[in-house]
Length: 481
View 1 (cartoon, rainbow, N blue to C red):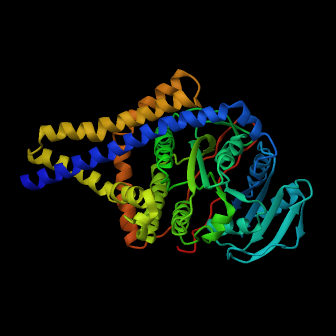
View 2: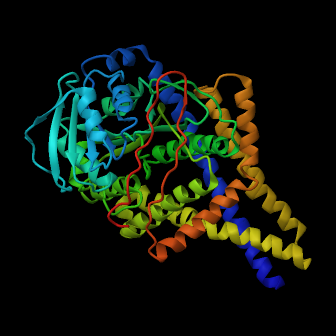
View 3: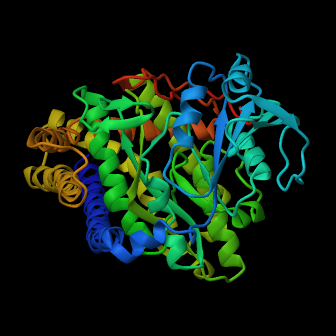
């Protein structure tokens, strides 16, 4: 038993040291990139360029399923974004309520013939509509096929070279599209750009806009604020700097349409169609030996509602992790393959060892500590090192992400919000992180047992200052389950 516990101790300590060292590396890589992006955003010449006709036209893709109560407000808010040349393609994905009728009445829709070819196969279309009052708006009415199928139908109908998928529970800051297109203006090799997603729980929303950003007082959403800050302000920027960004949030990512069509669009069978799309882009572009970039920029911001109940969080993270397992397995040919550069030699091994199998090691570490303590075999040196590597190092990285937010963007006003974030950054290491590891372990086994339920995302809605703001459509399960 002593030998088993000692061996487990060494494995667990090595894992946590390697994991948090890599997190620290990503944070170090992120700092100069944030400063550079902040400098570009404030450059007067660049600001003039962003207000000119040089901006590339964008199609905003809006899938909708059973969104009768909020569809008008959602579309109206998107129509007011600060951008010169864009269109909106709303896809009614076979809604069973009166979503289509609400759109028809609100925007005075009239039917038009289809004048484009279907580059990506989708469920059959019923009709296309344009608006008499909003010339930028196109509405596609189709048979139900799930979110990915709706996005593919919107891509088929789009006219412009850049496309961005927007969830209906996503509140986009007015100038976010201007900021998101910045990499496309700086280089012709950009295939996709991701922006920052922040937590809207506790914020005040007016007419589909966050007008007063606040840290939610509820424990669970508050912890997710820190989690999102760490993931976006250090993790994704760090991976982007290494040219190996694998994840662009499905709620806020801008893509070159031709590249998306070339890989067959969004995958209808994937549990996480956003991750799968980015991996398909990496694989296809590397296979063609083309120079390209998939990048992340921190200052374009959108806000979304996160789970406020543990059972809802468990369902969300279960689906996310099953999708990760699914995509890594599908693209396993890239693993340790020098043809795929850093994405194959560093990024995918990291996700395999730390994201896929790491939760098993973490759970094993906590079980070992409890068992060793119960048997009187707990090594104090190991426990001290474990506390430093697993707890204190994690606290340092979370607090560093909070400080980076405060120094760079200051989205949350007042010292009390900063203090709340620091407190939460400490508390998340005592229970929350361990719970997420358990969720991931369960998700791995659910994947092996082919459990593919999508899981209903229950939402409470935003805190309104005046008019109602968008809430998320509840898409049915994908064709896979």
